[in-house]
Image (cartoon, rainbow, N blue to C red; front, side):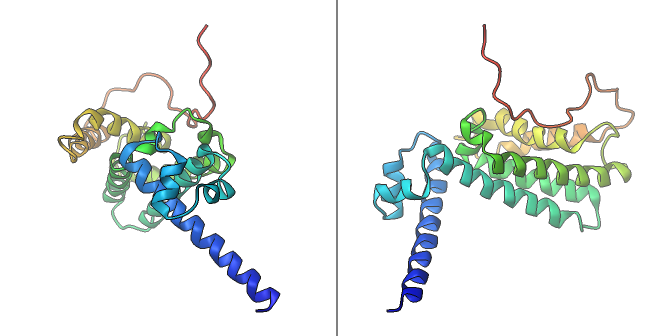
Length: 213
């Protein structure tokens, strides 16, 4: 075997192992939250525990990689929906996809406030999601499908809010989030709405919250 062939094989193994680890971790965190151990993730992936740490120095690095996958998927959905003919249906589909993703993935909402949220690539991905959500929302505003004072950042925040509202019910009613999604969608488009208090957020608060005292 030549050195080039050997190097290519090693790279293929690295790619394969990373894919296996991300798949195993995504399933484990989605099922049980972020407290799953790195050892269990390695076992699920069929790899040695040391292999996990060769790819991800800490659990927060692993969570950041998983967050990036979900954020990229949501951003891709929003990008695709920008080409849809009906802006109202496009925004509805985006919100449905987002809340459904959160409802089936315990880990995503549990990482808020953790160091993984401070990962530069994660922060950039969240900003990109807010930008494309604003583009979707702007189209809906222009077509009178949502109230004029709703922003894309409002929409992204609502995804988490809807999920958190339904979260206590999901074990017994896995689709309960759809009820609260419909309530939110109705509130986004009402005749003669009253002005909203407070200014809309210009961005998501990604920094660590201040310590009490």
